[in-house]
Length: 240
Ligand code: BEZ
Image (tube, rainbow, N blue to C red; front, side, top):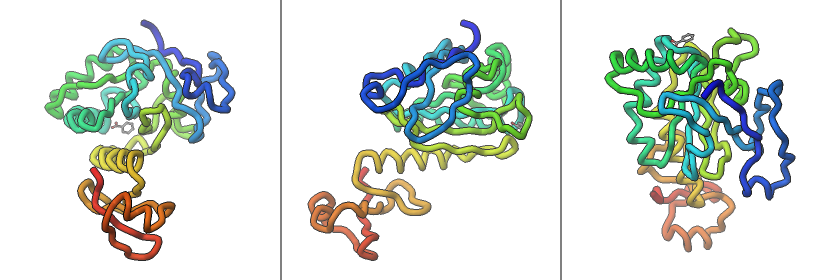
């Protein structure tokens, strides 16, 4: 397989039923003008785990797509080893992680040896080869005022319906905190499945907030007892 190939932006029956205007990508049109209503672009690419079709790879589970400025760079080396070490935590949450870096598959494979040496973790998730920066363009990962051969550190958390749940953008020189990304996923999965929100600095096991749209009577029916801190701030046990 050669370079990455963008897929039409809208391609599932769920999305076809929405009032979106599907159109084909052209080779010139490679930037994703992000908005929360637009599904994350699909692509075919080579990766360290073999060729992947991004949407097929995610299936109906959760996904994290995260970019790296370049192979054989120090911060990225630590980040990829860290994510490999956390793979079982992502698996537990039904989340597939996919890294992307703007270098060739051959370079990725060579770099994987260094990642193992440095961090003790072998790459155990796909690292997409994006030498022509197709994926970086689709996801707008290139900073317009910085080196246009490198990506910033983007993170996209994608829900099971192929909707973007969260985006983060870090500069190249600042490594990300992947425990925080797992914490956010824990919150996203609670709030997707229960009528709750999570407070500042919340961690799994701590009390959650009952969404304000529920009346007290409805909240009692769903959660039983709860604590009323203010009429609009009601707390209950972590439903997980
Ligand atoms: C790094 O991964 O170490 C890095 C990459 C680009 C700029 C600065 C640091």
